[in-house]
Length: 640
Image (cartoon, rainbow, N blue to C red):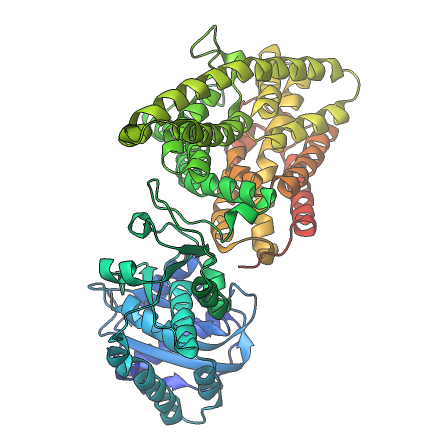
């Protein structure tokens, strides 16, 4: 399906004047309507905006390709505008977009993915982009596309038939499986043509793998380039020279990568199970970068449990609030509907730390590390010791314990691999199914049982310290409690502060209610501060973090501090200090204003029972803004 067959002259506007992203979308939808591609503009607009919520469709280099499948689409079609002055479309490179195509696709089939792939391949050509911006009429615009489309795709088939086969192969993949996947493939294939080295690139896009490498091609190739930021099936490359890099390197350094393969200075890949992607020259990778990569693997897999579970718990609070439930220990489970959402949400949350630890370990040791990390993360939540196999509330290591378990679990499996390398080759098959999981879990269990009591002691020491502060300074106590709620977000410091506040409610005094108010506001600030930062300091966060940031508004308002964990785990040296200071400011102000709270949980849903609620809101806003500003100051601009 050719681009020029889908794009009509009446659906093209050159040198358009648009003020912002929304006005650009409205203009493109209007062009679709004019061309007869859609039958209900409102329904189609909703589909476009829903797609934009999952991440901007601006891919950089001045290109934006909003797209959507919708029942409102009468027939597949394209609309296009050029904006010489550019429009801010939230592109990953931070630059304005000046060439915008909008794809309208019916619900049946994947025509939008096919068109998107072809468009991205064509728009990688800088000469075409210049021709499109210079076009004076829609006819010139279409002619430029037709010319480049014929050059690129009409000559594709003869180029495939290389008598000597492909000397270099590549696989490209990005997390969304759309733009950068195809951009890297196109850049590598063009570089191969320029160097006179036949190259074939497989794309692992959102519509599935395309241009798939065959066994014969893999066997005959000099080497394989894996330009990917997401999992690639690696077993087929066992015994071949494999160069593993980021997808961005495939776009920006294609010639360098091909020349490196041809030099032969590339390690031979030996597969040990699972789909994996790692950076080029992992052995030369800095220790800090390795730690970050392992952390991100755990965080990305943990995030759905945090978001799904957190929103279900928030729904439970909302239902009980509407039902007029008492704000006591039963709040959130008082009505059957609330109890359902709270129970399921708690189950999802229960997986959060095991998943974090499991996938950190898997990043370090591949698939054999998964089980060992999961067990370690579970032990961190259960409080196992040598004396008590499970359920010791004084020995729960929480978030920090799960982080430790993930890294220790991964390196335990790495150690077991080295030790088992001395075993006879006839035992090779039982290593991943018996030796690694059995001995790995035994060692992991022993390690966690050994460190859990120390964490329990730490919790007790912290709680005793807080009790001794009460009579010294009310404001200082509020600041300390608020800050502690943000130190480890569900770990020993957080739990110690929360237990100190909630247990004190039994005293039923004004002082104990003030403490509980400071504790809850301290726990609300981190997610809200992060959500605000992702909104007002977008360049400091990745596209995935910006998507998740919106959910943190809900989690923060519902007193679900754990919503901040993925951000803290990804960048602890900047996120944690910012959140701690913001929470400390909020907790101190809450105490200074004499705010009180009689409920142990609930976030905004228990604000009706907060004493001095208006000043409590002021404290929350000030603390959140302080955290946001510190995040904007401390975090580095992200290069995607």
